[in-house]
Every structure is written in C-alpha cells, then in structure tokens.
Image 1: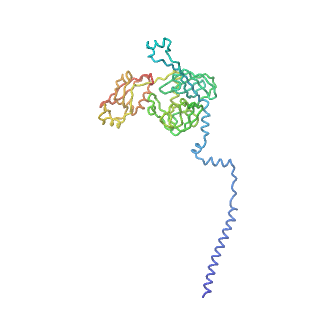
Image 2: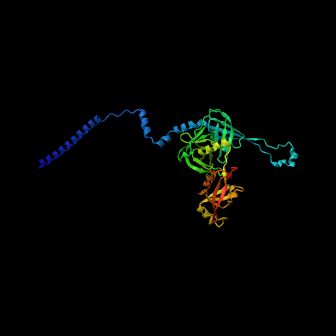
Image 3: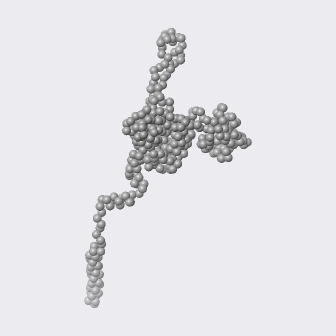
Length: 404
C-alpha cells in the first residue's frame, strides 16, 4: 500500500522540478535575446544636452534664471541716461527787528543787512530725447535752479538750459549743446503696458551713478490724489522696482529697453512702491514745453471729494452734521475758489456734480480728467444736485496759473 503513495509523490515532485527547469530555461533565453534586439544608446554631446535642457525649461524659469534681457535693455538705453546736478543760491535776510534804532545804537550802520548766501545742491536723473540735446526730467529736479549741469555716462559734462517747466505734471525739458553725437533713449508706448510686465528703473539714486533696479508693473492709472500729491494731474504707473531720491527724472523701461515712464515719486511710508509718469503723457507735454516753454492747463476752481450714496447716508444720519448731502453718486464740492470759473458760474459748496456734457461723473479723478482734456475757454455743461433740486450750469474753463 505504500508503493502507490510513493509513486504519486515522485510524480508530483517530478512535475515541480520540470516546471522550475522550464522557467529557468525561458528566463536565460530572454536574457540572451533582449540585448540583441536593443539598439545601442546614442552618444550625447554637451551641446545636445544644453538643447534638451533649454527645450524643457519653462518661459517663466528661463526669464527668472537669466538676466540677459535686463542686460540687453540697459545696454540699449544706458548711455542716454544722464545725471543732473543743480545749484541754487539762497540769501537770508537778517531779522527785521535788527533794523530797530535800539540795535543800531549798539551795532552801528555797518551791521549787515543780509546773511551770507547759501548754496543748495540737488541731484536727479534724466534721459536724452533726441540728438539735438533735449533732456527730459522732472520739474522738481530743476525748478528754481540757478545752475544745471548734465553729466553723461561717458564722463562728459555740459551746462544745461531749462527750456520749460510744467509743475502740474512735474515735467521739465533741459537743453544741452553737445553736437550731434549724443545717444538717444528709445521711447515705447505706455498704452501697451500691462500689470505684471517687467519694469526696470535706471538712474542715480542717492548719488550712486548708473544704478539699475528690477521689478514689475504693480498697477496702472494710479491717480495723483490716491498717491497723495493733490497738486498734480497725473495717472501714474505704479511699480515695485526700487526708486529712491536721485532716481527722479530717470527712465522706467520695459523688458525690451524702451522707456515707458519717468520715475517721479516715492511714498516715504511705503516699502517697494514707486510711481512713474506714463511716457505717452510725457511725450505730449515735452513737445509743448519745447515749443512754448509752458503748458496751459484748464481748471474749474473747486475742491472736491468722490461721493457715494453710502458716504452721503453716513453724513446725513449724524445729528452733528452741518449739511445734508444728496445720496447719489457724483463729486461733492467741498470748497469753491473765489473768482474762479466755478464761482462765476454759480457753483456752491455742498453741490454734487454728477454730469458734464451729458456724461455721468462718478469720481473726482474722472471730473479732473474731463477738465484736463478740455480746451481753454471751452464751455462745459455741468449738472449738479443741490438739495432736492437739479440744476444745469455753464462753466467756461480758464487757465490754471499756479499749481499750488
């Protein structure tokens, strides 16, 4: 009885051994066949490797990891960026009390009537507009300067003559006589600028000549009122490219090395926020300054505040409020300048301007832009809400004589 059982066990063992043997044979055969079917790996050179890496690199990574576009942009415009040094002489008079005979009795008639003069020096930037030697900069860089010196990147210096200043837009044009071999900054178009575009500031911040900083365009059409410069009429390009004292008047470039703005202002209470005048606005102003030496700006003569129904309601529910304001969208007149076009037309404090020439007005910046774009002497049809009544007034614009 044991032999059949042993026989069956031997047969099962033989089957397992045969299966293992066949598996080993097939595995060895496969290992021998695979190398003969595979082609040898291609030889990869350093040049091919660089091509593969470049193809796999994303545009964003390529832009960040390589600064070649910044170098190219700066090289394109760098020699046209200038340093502007100014000098201004201030003479301070002696206190008028020293004219009193009592003091004369002790000091005599030889007592000086004037203190020694004092030299104030300033520093700014600018860039050359054309080969004739026109330089564009900020008005506050050269305003009231007795002497203007323009220094080129190659070390040449020239005396500059201020051809025109416009305080309202903070722009000025300076002329130097340097022949016709001057480098010229390529001008772009600020109308094509988008938020997130590269922004490259070039200038002489804090006296460090030929300094370049890189950032992006943070936002567009930031009004001068929002920036805190109420006496200007501008919509700035805002950037996080570092702008410091001395950068004023220098160019703000795009990634192609074209001027898209003029660096003009910083907020002392903010980090990484600077402002530039759009180049499209600057080109138009520079042309007028070169031709006429000044720019005529129309004005109405009101101090104003953007009004919304919510703001009006907050005022009206206050029992201590001296005036009830119409709960509408528009521009609230806070003050009317005496002898101004608005005063002559009958605009009153507390009026709400909500329409000009049939166009709805919803903000102070919008009204300011409408007036700025009008002609001197143009009659504007203005609708105001006065209490519960609506009135239409005709206001003839006049020239703004003093920016302040």
